[in-house]
Every structure is written in structure tokens, then in C-alpha cells.
Image (cartoon, rainbow, N blue to C red):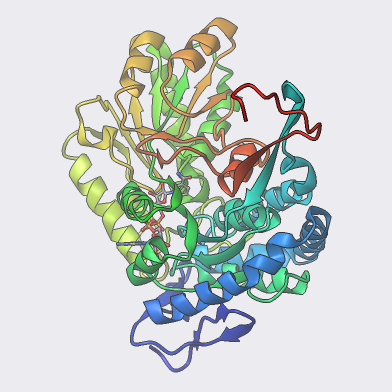
Length: 492
Ligand code: NAD
């Protein structure tokens, strides 16, 4: 660890601590390639301490009336609003996305906080009188205990905020482990939560990798785990957590298709495709990575696309507000993406090569386009998680749908068309959980579940919306009668 840079603080109970550990992960500014901080890789000892504080805080916090929990969320909302630009800049600094994208990142999280402000309404149970003779039934939704959140690097604000605002608003306590690559945004989000008046121990922040995740998945005092990241780790967390008796919701990787029909509006569709494929440098689990030009539209679409890709301004977002696309997260990602381009270019057409933008400072990869991709080529099913788009050219919509349904993942799929009939056929036949009709990134807003299918999600209840509230609560059904007139049917 360089002595010139700092250690990222953890929140264990009420104290922020710069914990010294044997191992650290470097936090980079991906646009310059410079180290800006060091994430301590905590051990199970420190994580267990955080879990203990969360366990101690649970009985009091879970008894707070929902209006009091909501009022802290209202305070938090105001603080986020006041600090919006500063957080967006922090996201851009440690993740590399443009300021507009960083604002979108925090905005989506902000909307979950707004949803959590209405917790008194969302957490309500049901009641029905006279469910049997003289018996009334009610359900209540009770918090489940200490919940854990484990998040990826690509949305430093939004993804953790899919988790903790709802969990806490429902009366649970929380231990968050953000990606070790982008821990600074999480620190700021948690500081503001403390400032909003959250009692000590309700929120804890720990840092690290596998040892921390394993501790969260196996510790007897953790009730539920929310995970988002690659599918391999999502599946691992799902298995380890659930075999240790925990509720688990685990979002994984994706390969999302954008279908362009011959009748689609050309300009609007092109803009949507460019933004879906190269926004956040392609590092989105909802990134459009397969572009399916149906029939005769493929050729003109490809020409326009290459033109737009050549005009995309790639660079350091905080140095120039006109930058359209920032770097990828680190050198490992940059090398992984360029190796994929090397290999796939031997198999299919390479129409635009993003390796031209590799520089010494910053982890840049330019926009890349492959064409003539078929379901049996290697790039078809592989998540690249970078600015790499693959074009396919089926003869009709049926063939497009049958190709898309061969994918193992199941996050998003979009169609661009002026035909209601084509849109209806598409949305009813596609086997994935989030559908766009003339929408490039159909990522649901906070009142809807983020609804991945297949290898893009392991679990039953998704993050956000009503499913989020269900995940962080369990129901209790009470049947009551007050008439004191039980029948004497059995002789006693
Ligand atoms: P990742 O799987 O490498 O890391 C995610 C989390 O898992 C991090 O907190 C990391 O510290 C932890 N982790 C890493 N290796 C581990 C191991 N061996 N054991 C236990 N924990 C481990 O993912 P990433 O690179 O940070 O994020 C990119 C991935 O996340 C992409 O595949 C993307 O599609 C996916 N993602 C999915 C969604 C969704 O909602 N489905 C949303 C955003 C990102």
C-alpha cells in the first residue's frame, strides 16, 4: 500500500475505523489509472463485530413505528438531494462513468429512498373479518433481522440503494459490503444515512472480498442476503447462503438483445442503441450487447452505427463535460475485453475496432462492433461487460425471437418497431424478465421489481418495489375470536 494514499473507512457499530489489514485492494481513478485510495480486505473477525452491532441494534429499531423509520428516510432524501452533485462526482471519480451517467446512478438510488419514505403504506398487512364463524384474520409484515448487501462495481450508488433503504425502512438492521473497487461512494452514502438520524448499529459498512462474503453467507446472525454481481458468484452466494438457512436474492450477469424491425424510426432507434450499448462503457447488466437487425434494416443500420461510433467522444469525463464514454473499471477489465476482441475477430467480422483507443493513462477501450454473429459463435452467449456490440441479421422476427431465447441469461430485451402486433408478439414470446418497446434500457423504476430471469437471477423475490418489501419482511397471520362461545361438540 502506498503511504501517500488513504485507507477506506469501515463503519462498525457507531465508529468509523480505518482498519489496518494484511491485504488491500487499490482503488483507481479509471480515467487516469492513478491510485486514489486503498480498500482494506477485512477478515471474518471484523465482519462478525459489525454483525454483532447490527444484532444488538435490531430489537429497538424493529420496534420503531413506521412513521419514525419513514421520517429518517425523508431526512436522508433531503441530504442526498443537497449532496447530489458531490456524490455524482465521486461516482465518476472511482468508477469512470460520465457525470450524466453518474447522476443517473444516484438518481435511481434516490428513487428507492423515495419509495422507502412510503414504508408505512408498503408494509401494511391485510385483514378479513369472519374468515370462519366469529373469527377474524389479519396479516402483519415483520422485519426479519440483520440483512446483508453485497454489491458490484458498476453502479456504486444505485445497486447498494436497491437494498439498504428498503431493508432499513422495513425495520431491519444492515451490513453492507460494497465492491472493493468502488468503496468511496458507499462511504458517503452511509455517512449521510448517519447524518439523517439513523440510530447507531442499524447500518454497518465493511470492506473486502471472498472472506467477508463467506462470513456474511454463513454467520448464524444474518437472516437475509442481497447480492448483485457476476453469475458465478451470484450462484455461489445463493447456494452458500440458502444452505445456511438464509433468504437470498442474487442478481447475476446478462446478455441483452436489441431487436430493430425494418419499420423502426431510424434516428430515434440509433440514439437508443448507442446509449444502451456504449453507455457506462457497456458496463451495465442491462447493456444492449446483441443488436439484431431484422431483414433489410441490418445494412443501413450498421452504416449509421459505425458513423455514430466514430463520432463518440471517449475520454476522462471529469476533465471534459462533452465526453460521451469513459474508461472501463481497471486494467484487468481492459485486458480481458481486448483479449475477447482478439479472439472473436478471428471468428466473425470486426467492423469497428475499439483497441485503437488503448492509451497508457486510464483504462480505455473504444467502441467495438462485430457483425455476422450467429447463435453458434462464441460471442453470442458471452457477457463482455465492455463497449462491444455484436450484430446479427435474422430473416424475420420469429428467427430473432428463437435466437434470443437460446441465451442462458434473462435480464432485458428490447424491440424497436412501429407495429403493435410485432411488439406484442415479442413481449409475449421472449424469455426474460425486463422488456423494452422502443426503450433501449428497460431497467425498471423503484416501484417495480428488477426482474431478472434464468442465470441473471437466483432466488424468488427480486430487488425493488413490492418484492423488495416482501423479501425484507415475513408475514405473521393472526386468527382471533372474542365471543367465548366455542361449540361443545366433543363432550368437553
Ligand atoms: P463480481 O461478481 O466480481 O463482484 C460482485 C461482488 O462479489 C463484489 O462485492 C465482490 O467483492 C464479490 N466477490 C468477488 N469475487 C468473489 C468470490 N470469489 N467470492 C465471494 N465474493 C466475491 O462482479 P463485478 O465485476 O463487481 O460486477 C459486474 C457483474 O455484475 C456483471 O456480470 C454484471 O452483469 C453484474 N451485474 C448484475 C446486475 C443485476 O441486477 N443482475 C446489476 C449490476 C451488475
